[in-house]
Image (cartoon, rainbow, N blue to C red; front, side, top):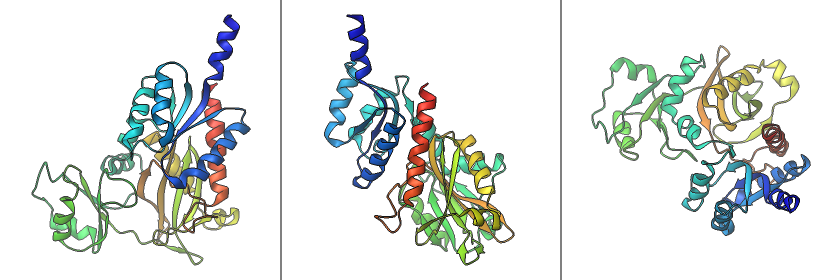
Length: 311
């Protein structure tokens, strides 16, 4: 009887569960599942049709997850109870909600990056409109920003919501602050990337449990390309790896991306700090998607690291 109970318990255990609600995540989840299976582990998919049922089974002890990757909880309240329940269990989160809350605050990350010796754009942090309606800005600080500059809310994420890329007046600041009245705002200088053999020195860098995968990325077209080995050496791009590792030490997220630009004088500047839910659309299906081989590598690293952690 005891043996039967143990086999039953094991049959309800899944090494990693993925919650997702975006139709374009389908291919990413499928690739991740194949890599998980390749590591002789079991995966579990949570979507709209089974979110409530999954929570009930977890509560009843009919299911158990070793790790949980939540790509839906921030945008759909249907998934929130699931994450809330799992937080009270030993489940390994990718990424933990408490760490996400800390990492996505651009104002906090700006200050912590500076303390960690990571170059960031000159920025002015403004209090939330709901807390302080008046803006206190020194002319000398505004002069350092130069024109145009960027206005971005500190905590709003996804698709550049609330971001003004070509702000040019005090009125732009006043208007922007009222869109997200309870959020801090950053006024940030625009970074001009240095051209490297005809390519813009702008990169999106993925980090998976501290492993780093940098890619060329255009901040205007959003087109990716693979960094070849000879380009890494020719353009001396190794700082992309060391900077991403330092960001990992600051934000402590298992899976995130960051943007880094190379400016004239070979200065590597973190321009968009921490993105906790990375767009994993495949380049073979979407012109502005992530190269398929990079998605494959990310999924392989997630599977391997989860297996190592669960041991």
